[in-house]
Amino acid sequence: MTTSASFKDILASLPDTAGIAALVLLDEHDEPQARLENQPGTAGSVKVYYALVQRFGHIDRTAAQEGLALYAEHTTDARLNPGKHPNIDRLLAIAEAGAPGLKARLVLQND
Image (cartoon, rainbow, N blue to C red):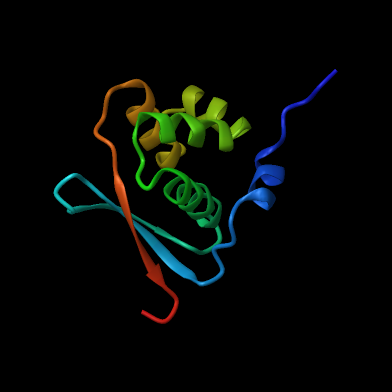
């Protein structure tokens, strides 16, 4: 019997975000859509989104689908409780509802 990795376990495998203060998500016109602060409560989302941007360069449908897998058990909770997990809701919209993709700009600790 195999079990899926938990979000906590997945986070430990993602790239380090220690030097990042925040990640700003941008639309196709480079207009900010959201800012994810690298602090308790959103640090996990910063790690997920940063990993996606590192791998794909942006967040399109394919990247969003991978992001949903990275969020593991939280993706199921987000599906059952729309609005509870806005950073997962954003990926669901891109992956499954045809929402436009996003780019990201890093805000480093010393900026």
